[in-house]
Image (tube, rainbow, N blue to C red):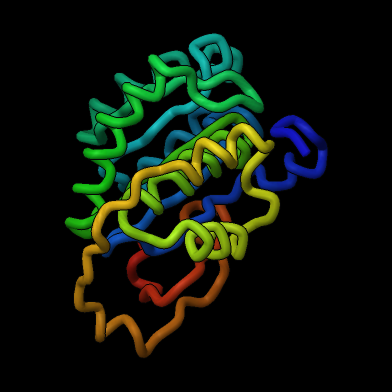
Length: 211
């Protein structure tokens, strides 16, 4: 299954979110891919991520009117990283170097309780690949990270090359944070921000997803 299969398109309009390293990691479609660009951008800004990682190419961003996504995010104090990967592919060596820097910032944001949002074209494939890699780099066991990610939406990763790259991540020592207050409550699934459905996995308070 590839990023552009009709079955995968059903993820449009959904922010898939799960707790990672004390913060929240989310996967979403590219703004403008399934709705108007302005509306999708508003949804992302309402979610208030510390970092947005774009994995689509410059041409793909332009195709949905998202060519100015980076500057528009930065105007709202959201850091933006462009790590372009071809559809259904893994990063090239040069792009992998760019990912290393991006991942380091993303992990710091998550460990500080912040939010990180990753998007490909349709909210799976490349985005799932990068999310899984980040989870492992943040200290999770590869198999457990894959199971948690697939609990949100399956399939989340497009192909063998993407899965191989994600699972080859160097695992950091896990950071254990006290979240005892959160552990007694599970969030309800439902509408997250302005009609975007937010799916959740793990123990996180519902308040973590309110805007």
